[in-house]
Length: 207
Image (cartoon, rainbow, N blue to C red; front, side):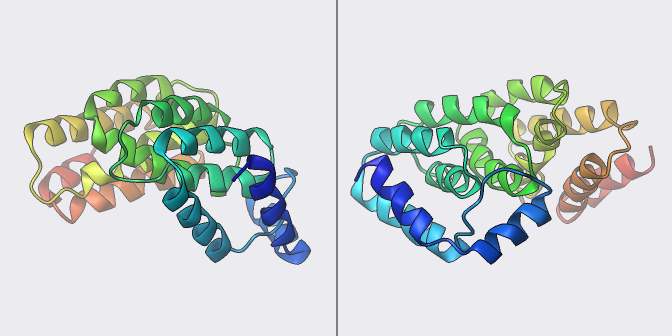
């Protein structure tokens, strides 16, 4: 299974009308082939079953470098896995790519992948301050989109509680950012927290 073989299969599975809709929805001029989500999912599953983690990381890197929306979505899917050992290669790629997210589809898929890696090693949350200071709005959004799992924890450990407070501190620091992408991300994070810690969420809302 080579990158070229997979990219050829992706291109063949494309739909020009779906591609046009994807570009419009994501407000991007990036090349897109219009591959259906179920095809991306099936191809990702096939690659996972056939390759090692290290090989998957190499393939994901090649797909990302193709600069095509569908290929980048596949790259992110390959790295979206709760149990991935070793996962340092995946984390290295994701922690670079987060600064290159340029539309909602990539930011959403990236947040799903990043969230798994942050949950696997919460000490990686140290990167959040760097993300919050980035000029890229989608990187800044990832502070919240990639950490929603910590807000949803039913019985938070000390580490989980510390993670929540870290994110809430950044939400406070970004309170003056009026861009809808950021406001929606913060509001969504606090709403997720409210389901499990309504008192703390209410304190944030009263600020």
